[in-house]
Length: 384
Length: 246
Ligand SMILES: Cc1ncc(COP(=O)(O)O)c(C=O)c1O
Image (cartoon, rainbow over all chains, first blue to last red; front, side, top):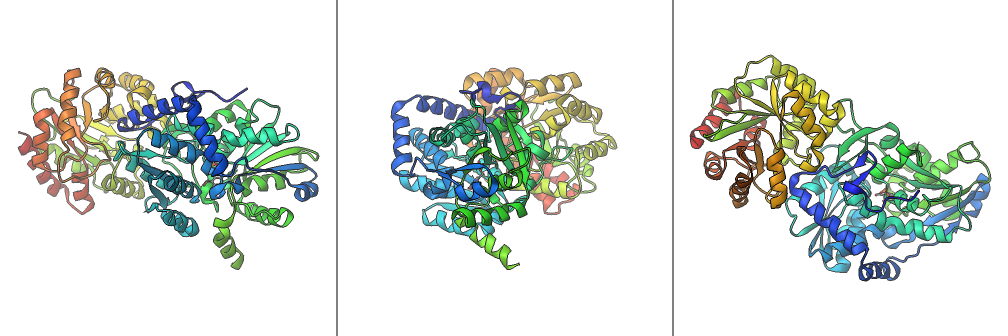
């Protein structure tokens, strides 16, 4: 199979759609039209590719993890999104959407952020293109990702603390959407993952497709398993897009405390129908993960669809496994990855040699970001 | 659902916000409400400003549930229509048919779902109709004419004209977009058109009613309730709105 070109009515099977207030429907429709046009426009594509190359540092390398792979008895290749400018894959999507915002005459970018990586990428693109940026971030995430708050402010963005609900990514997303409704003519809502109303799940996957396309041309042979961490699911979606038409198994790894695919039920939150952590009445549950970027009760609708089809599989790992995985990768390969990315590593560590990942498997793992932002969290954990 | 001819007043209360919250419903009725909107609180009220967010949080923290709120309503006798207002996930989680039948069972005859635009409304619309519940659609200042016509044709009960581009919440002035939108909606439907979002004072209600068939007042009343206003206190507020509307 391949991933859907523009999904009709924004639907991926039973999932997706556009569940937003009427006030936002025209803006979503305008954005869908603009993206459709831009994506077919060679000038736009060339400009984005140029920025990705000379500014974001693409293509990112594929690193064979020889020592760790050897210890585990598998061939392990790491797609190094941690080496992209700003330190994660988020820049791929942000540059695309920021160019689109400029094309639409918008002067302000509004974004939600969890780990702060998407916020930093948005603040970066705003600085690059001369736009203003307002970033909503849960106050709990502000505490645990303080370095990224400092980076955003240094880049000229305004960071707005969100104190409602769980004070994490879910609540930051609510607040960003509220800010968008109040400023549609001037603002572009620069959503950071493959959730939200149509066209976001499709558009963000297309902007992240570059991960999978590059990796496909870099791997020595088609892998048996392609694995990535999943919060909203954008680095996984971009990676899967390059391999969905191969025999590779596609594995998304969720945080045990934010496992929408594993522990959720179909629901509507933040503009689309997907799998959602919620109670029997439909109140959205609060996720809980050491990784702020995965501390979210939902997941992009295309993942829910791929999961329902059985084309992709979803696994969970615990906070403790994640911390152990960061350290193991650091010692074995000299790479300190983000807490989010370490979820993918943790699953490989657990599964290698089992029926889920037999010895001798060829594994492509997307390392979505670098761990600098997590040093405070990790050092505090080490003190305890 | 909304009387034709006069100017309708539809005050709102968040279900379960206090232990005796149905006293507010009765106070609204006594003060001359034409219908009463009951908020079924949702954890993530994306289209609501601070006041309704706080009201929802308070109700949920008290343990409010849809079933509990509907049971409370079954215990009082209200002579005006009741309209539920909630977010799409609560409707879909139960299933539109089950959800709408539950509303009808508690005497609720209208439903407003702000994150369910007309394009996504088919299933809920059909389920509501089967249960005898009117699915009231919202129109916004940015809604283009062709969509407005579709909203007018598919809405039931009345059309809810969202006064401004923004969330719910008290405002010092009524946005000029309110009367422009109400006039545009009235041109495409025979249903009554009510203006809501930000209508805070009797004077604003009177202004809104010049171009519309009535108003929905939510945040201004809930701010009072959050600050400790008793049912008697808000009866006075609603009576003042009633007097201004005529
Ligand atoms: C490094 C990193 N990886 C992954 C994620 C999760 O996002 P997604 O699932 O959309 O890739 C984040 C989000 O903040 C992140 O910072």
